[in-house]
Structure formats: C-alpha cells, structure tokens
Image (cartoon, rainbow, N blue to C red; front, side):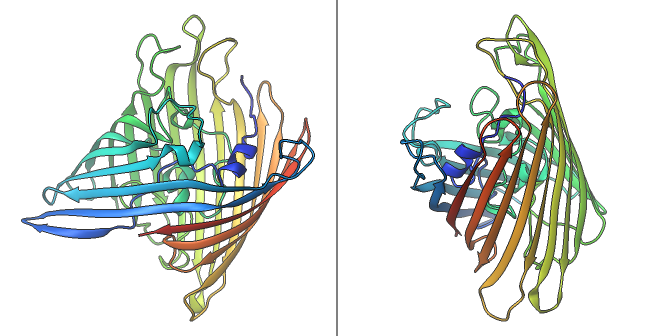
Amino acid sequence: MNGFAPKVRHSLACLGGSLLAANAYAAGTIDLGDGRSVSIGAGLRAGYSMVEDAAPSGTDDSSDFNVSAARVYISGAASETIKFELNTECIDCVFGETDPIGAGGSIDILDAIAKFELSPEFNIWVGRMLTPADRIEMNGPFYGLSWNQYNVPLLPSDDLGQAGLLGRDDGVTVWGATGKFQYSVGLFDGVDGGPNQEDNLLFATRLAYNFLTMESNPGYYTSGTYFGTAGDIFTVALSYQQQSDAIGTALNPSDFDATMLDVLYENALSGGAAFTIEAEYKQIEAETTATGTGFYLQDGDSYYMTVAYLFGSDKTTKYQPYVRFVSTDPDTSGSEYEITELGLNIVFRGHNGRINVNYLDTDPAVGSSFSGLQFGVQVQI
C-alpha cells in the first residue's frame, strides 16, 4: 500500500477531485446590530470530462457530466472577537451514488469552527477545520490556479474517513501574522483508532514569509492566484505534519510525517495582466511493512510547478492560459509517474466566476499512459 498511486482517473471523473471545501471568501452579509452579523454564500463547480479508453468497454472514451462541488457557506460574528464558520458539502455530488467515507447522508458538515480572533498576531480556532498544510490544501478547489490541484500525494485528512474528511479534521489551530511573517499551528485527532492505539495527536504547522506584498485571505487560508489584483506577490512557505503510530495496523504501526515547501510568485503587470508561478516540493515519510486492513499513505517525494499568464483587458472577461507539470518518485513500492496539464481559465469575476478548459496527460513508468479533456464552470455568490 506504500508508494505513489496515481489518482488521476478519479480526479478527472470528479473534475479535479475537489477534495477540499471552498474557503468562504464569497458571501453576502446581514447586519444584525450590536456587532453581530451573519454571512451566507454558496459555491458550485460542475462540467464535463472525457477520458481516453475509460468507457466500460475498455476501448472507448468515457463521457461524463459531473457536479464536483456544491457548497453552502455560513459565517458570522457574535462580537468583534467571537466569530463562527459553518460550511457544508454535497457528498453525493463529490462521490456519486457510492459513499466511500460512510458520511451517512448526501450533505455533510465540512467546517464547524468557533473563532476567537483577538488580534492580527494571535487568534484561536476550535472545531472542524483545514489542517495547516501546503498551499494547494489551503487554497481549496475554488481558489486554485489550475483546475486539477489534487493529483499529487495527499495528507491524512484527505484520506476520506479515518483521519478526517476532505482536508478537514477536528482540533485547534492558533494562527496570526506579524510584519510579513504568517504562521498557523494546530493539534488534531488525525488517524483515530486503527494503528493509533495510544491516541496520539496529529501536529500540523505552516510558516510563510511574504517578501513583497502581504497576502490577504481569511484566517490562514491561501489562494493560488490573485489575477493580478493583489500587487506583486512572492511568498515562500514551509509546512510540516507529524503523527506517531499513524499508519499500518494496530499490531504493526508506523509513524507519519510530511514536509512541504511551496512558493507563489505573481507579477502584476500593466493593463491588468499578470504572470504567475506556483510550485511545491513535498516529502512524505509513511513507510510500513504492515499488510491487511489498516491505514496507509503514499510514501515518497513529489513536486509540481504551474506557470500562468493572465492577459490584461479593459473588458470584464480575461484569459489565463497555464501549464502544470507534476512528478512523483516513490521511495518503496509503486511506480513513478508524471502529469502534464494544459489549461485555460476564462475569468469573469475572479474566483467567483470562471470557466476552465484543460487537457490532462499522464505518463507512468509502469502501466499505460492515459489522457483526458475537461470543461468546467465555477460560480460563487
């Protein structure tokens, strides 16, 4: 069960494998007076995918329409410092008729956070939330640069059940910023039961430094591009997660840790144009000799780079072609593979309204290569 197993077929079928709930950037606010308010928003990602030789016949191209994410965002404030966030996901939309995580219904709670936001430097969130991690995790599918962010090896909270749900886990995060330095540190349940008979907690942290303009997002969330509206960005971040006895079986447990280095560079050019580079190196240590029913993770190194150019225009619609390259190198079993994505974002209202067309091609060292074409739409209110 070790090694990097490409999850691209699932990713294509789900139009990018939208494993994370959208960050609730988009919402309308109702003022309740006396410092209280409620914000309500929603997000939808849907489209069409075609994968070469993936039809039931095995020789014909698959052809599928999908709703890959349908979310409702609710957040609010009881005072200037006490706030909350509640986001839901249509589980049936993500996974279809088969619910592999046993969520027990078509709608599930992704975020349920009590927020104590005391100052820019120090804040505490308690509940179910994103575990601090690399940029693609903090982007969520709605704020990524490319359409397919999640075809790289993922973390325990992405493993659909025993260690969290869709990038979320129950725990506490302390976060803040001072100067151009941003931090988030958290403790979470992580893998609960199974190999973790001693009930060890998952430690997760993300440390980022903004060399140019300070990125501005809710909490410790991120974006993969700002479409040139945030000025010149150059941010370098180091993330780390660790949990003892997190993989394997109760009789043969092993430790897990992951180290991730990610970079975002965006140069805002004249006329509304922008040049963007997003890149990451990730190392996951999850080696185990256990076999049978247990909790397993992909073990090895990976990296990706995405390069994009947004054409400036006085018109509402802008065009952002991009190319993304992904490479993985397993330390134990499994096969090395590479993924190339050629895409075009047609941008109407930033991350709140865009269309994407992309072509995805994989080249595994062992097994057959395959490719697919996608068309997707994304709307948030």
